[in-house]
Image (cartoon, rainbow, N blue to C red; front, side, top):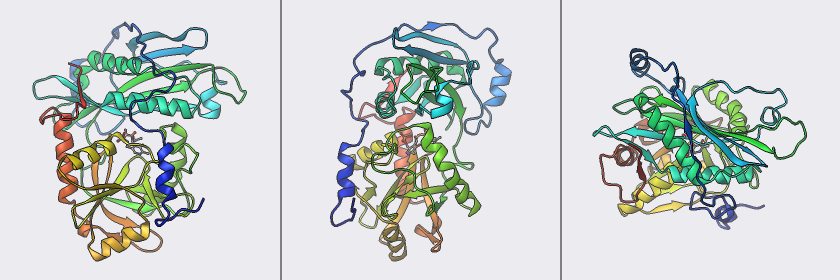
Length: 389
Ligand code: PLP
Ligand code: COI
């Protein structure tokens, strides 16, 4: 398909994209399950937990429990439990091990100053999980079950939520668990949620990151799986990310798979551009992940009267805008990293800096606004917060 800025088929392609708006898809119908809660017999001692929470980094420390729900065709979703975090017994013929029928989510629980706990837009994660399941031909988990599983886990492991700027990163995921080597949608699934106390995703916090423009690899094509959160997308991004590191960069940015010009997103984050007239631009939905942080930033920016365009933007425009000063800032955003300013872009055609490589005021201002809502320190005009405790 021809794609150009003059004839923005690229922007139209997004119209049929899965979104995080309320879903009416099959399987989203209201249904809740009673979770059986069995506290861990030997939970981590308070002393060990405190030691692990000092500098948790990202994704290496785990809480004592997990939530788990099973699916098969005869019973539907059943056997909902919160129990001690444990290994899964894995038959070597388990479908997920062969054909990667797997999806996941990422969201956080935040400790409020009054000691309570907030979740940020878990309903949006639940709906995106349904869109991911639909694309990967998996069973759809009802939204109330997703939210209940997350909430139950946060409640039982609330002592693991770090204070200060830390949070509890929640990782809901679903795997195809039928023991069968035929290539077809699995007839059985395991849905689980695990939790990991986290500090900053990037060592050193929201300092500007450097980005490598991938010319050898793409992330997603129209009709592919770029708009959903399946593990395979991340496996396919690792070689490109390794190339970024080899070139001394922190992260990789992918271009579109057709013309290799349009900026799409990073391996695990969406991207925004800030112009000299104060407006924002972010690539349109279609082949990118519909980020919940992206959606929240668009809403917050619009609240304060900022013009936000969801439009295609090329790497040539990025380079020219940075050179002329028309482009003031660029930043990446996602649950794990929140908002990270992009200071430097590197590619085989040469490197360039954005705003002299420094963190810009718009990125940092939006970051502060978002974080204050998440931690319950600012008003929540969009009703994004769900108090768990
Ligand atoms: N893009 C990709 C590829 C991601 O993995 C993520 C992280 O989840 C995002 C964007 C940002 O999405 P969200 O803001 O919902 O975390
Ligand atoms: C997130 O921001 O939640 C992500 O999932 C990004 C990455 C850790 C996969």
